[in-house]
Amino acid sequence: YGLREGRAYGIQLIMDLLEKRGLRGTFFINAYLDSWYPEKEVAEMVASITRRGHDVQFHAHPEFRCFRRCNPGDMDCRFRCTRKEGRTAGTSLENQIEVLREGALNLERWSGRYPVAFRGGALQADINTLKALKALDIKIDSSLSGPNHELAAVLPVNQLGVYERVLEIPLLAYEENL
Image (tube, rainbow, N blue to C red; front, side, top):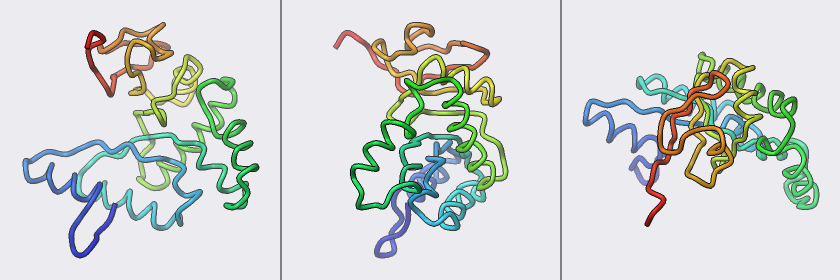
């Protein structure tokens, strides 16, 4: 995100390219960026997307939350934190609800709208993630990514699916037979 030598890169460049073709995009923004970057700057980035008529939705890299708890140079703390607090998939439903609620409220504060869609960081999501999304009234997940993904046990691969009243719109679709 940003400008370098007068040229737009990242999100700004993508918005420019979409707008030249009369299109708008959905940008899944890491809802924990304020743990590393000043919240005012994160809020301005999100506002710049919505001002231009694009959509902002919930992307989760909750391991960023560890930057609030650990000195940046304390790698042991950061390692312990990312294993314990910085995850969603593979943790309890209660933990996922707590972590995802924090992110959803961050995005609502920055964009003025509660998110309706979610994509797990590194595409991480499990059945508890879908249950947490339902509990938080987030209606769409886009984390399922192929036949080896944990959600493939309960949702169709490369197709729309519904589980726990959460609509799965796979972000990545590809053929298994290469």
